[in-house]
Image (cartoon, rainbow, N blue to C red; front, side):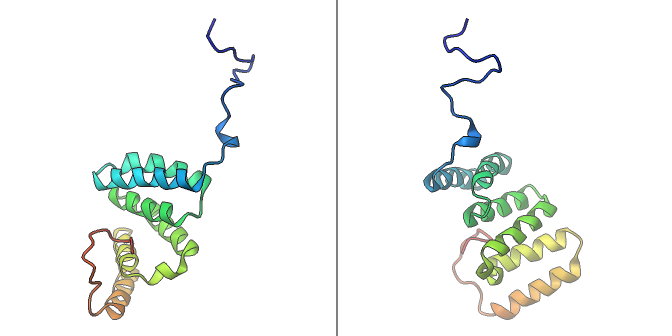
Length: 143
């Protein structure tokens, strides 16, 4: 006999099922911060596990989508990186023209063997940012 009694179907009345728990925005930010650290330390698979949780509860969260793009790029899952980029552009259309997002899109398209599209996006980057992006940050898509 266990210390906590459960019903016949295995339901523990003291634990709220995840489907009924709605995390606060601060919880998602904390999860995303942990994922960002994991990305910074070369652990994109672990970051993806956390970001999957964030995306489940906040599918249109811009920060989550940016981190998902970074994760998929790091694990070289170009198809999912492109899908995450599309979702990010849908949620935050102003980002579509950011230097980092243009460069990331060019890389993803090139890796998906779409050299013509990649070249076009890179040309767009060159036209828009002739003077450079100037902030010196290594992260491709966080403006």
